[in-house]
Image (cartoon, rainbow, N blue to C red; front, side, top):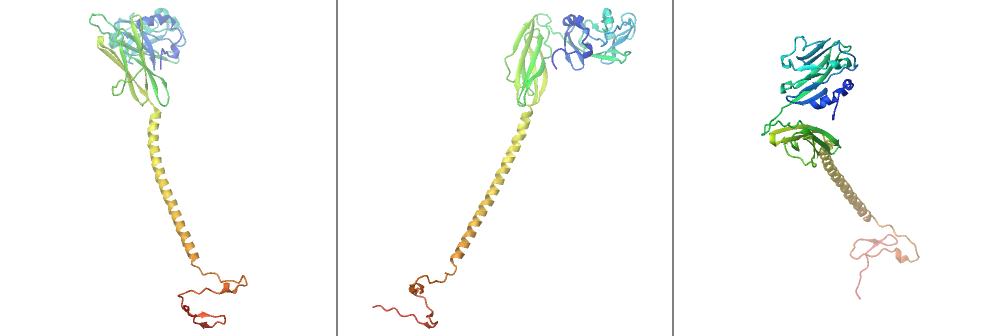
Length: 340
């Protein structure tokens, strides 16, 4: 959320109060309605308009603080300032409404001389409307601190921080300080208090007030805060934001998974290589056995392929004993070999 935000039912008819709001306080966005920020001892205007803009001069509207304390009640002209009883003593003599704006559906009130105790959630209720309507306003009263000269400088309000831009890898955080009476020191810190690198602060001055904008880029999921320090008045205030960087979380998990898969792939590859080598060695051994067995087989019988009969006679092997058969099948001792 950023900027100036109003409830859809309160957008109409507020133009006459814009200048008044600027004088008595600053209005920032709030999730449940208005957020009015004023300095202590000043006046605060709490806006409330019904959506139909009808004349509420003869209607009933009731203002309560924190759902309990009676702040201001108006009922067809009768209210706490002209005889009606029941107002909480904290607000007696300090609250008024805008009589001339009732015809436009305006039930806003003004609280004079606000104190820190006046901070809280205020409800503007129209119980008799059909349907009934309720508007919520948050009032923030800032304490004034005096400097050494006795003057009352305005302490820096709570900084406004937001995520200006983001990707899966980083987030760009922005911090804005609006309306500090003295130029503050503004810096970004992580959850441990470490100062983060940041862009050069953009500082401007308007009407004696300082406005500072500073950006930083973060790459890790975590909480970050913008710290505003005014040493002259011993004042420090900060605001915190949570940045979620999904890529870093995914990257950490992905790295672990990737390492696991690499180890698994290495083991699986080694096992497959061992099986292949074993199969190759087994195949080589089997091939060798078949070759040796084939070489040890009987020689084929000689066949007559020419007229040279001597080719068909078996060679005489020296040193081989045993009977040899002649052509008629008889055996005889081989002849002696005589040296001449």
